Amino acid sequence: MRLMKNVVNFLKREDGPTAVEYAVMLALIVVVCIAAITTLGQNANSTFNSVGNTIGSSS
Image (cartoon, rainbow, N blue to C red; front, side, top):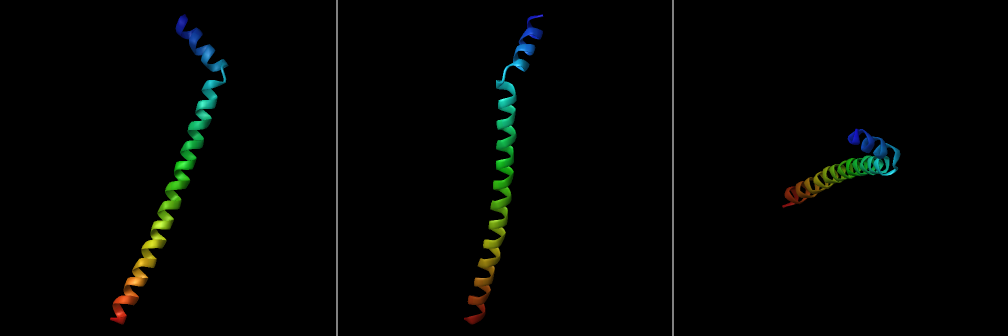
């Protein structure tokens, strides 16, 4: 009975949904950061390869 009362109180409070919203927001931020880092890494890699090939062919 006490457990059921605690669950009902948790669902009535605003702390639970707020924590879930923060967790979802954090997950979205992490996904965007990973996508940005991956894209920048690929662009940097292609740029370094291009520069390396240019320097290598001119020697």
